[in-house]
Image (cartoon, rainbow, N blue to C red; front, side, top):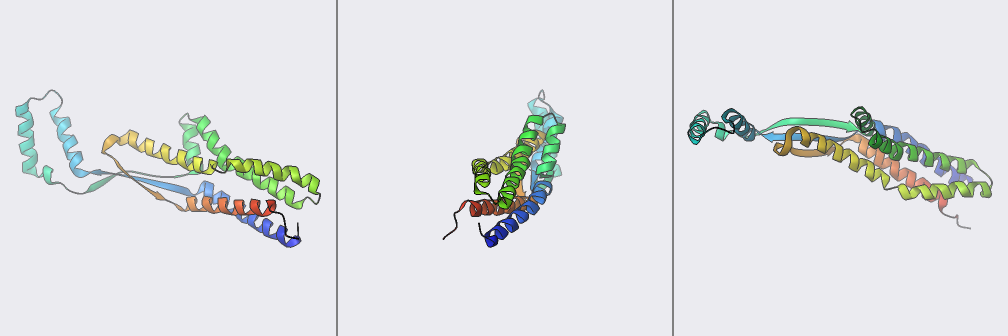
Length: 205
């Protein structure tokens, strides 16, 4: 491998390594849950009436509700707001007794990426092709786990959405927005893939 190509690979690896830390520690997703104010009013009336109330009681409360304008309430109320990073989600999962899931996320989002970068760096500084070949082979084998990054994001979204739904039930309307950590992690993936591809491709002679 030429010195110029080694330098390009090294720069790509350093950039990807620098992007991995904020990708794991910075917020990646924000979930916001809103509830219609009218539904809250309806729920309050139902709680006051109770299940055993007769029709007359219900009609009387409905009339009072209409008189007070509860049936004309408009707008939404933010009932849930949660921003999480990959590492913050791992910490919460571990604290709530979901240690196996937390360890899986750490393994796929941190251990494998760091191990792959270590293999690439080691193979970059080895002059012997015989010593470099096994490292590149192992790195290529680990590349089959590239979709694990998608898995991490999927687990994160599912966990946060499930946590929110468990608090408010069907009344909650969820909205998701991506945060800077997601783009850092995405950039890490792209730079790491570029470095790995550049190392595997044979040079033109």
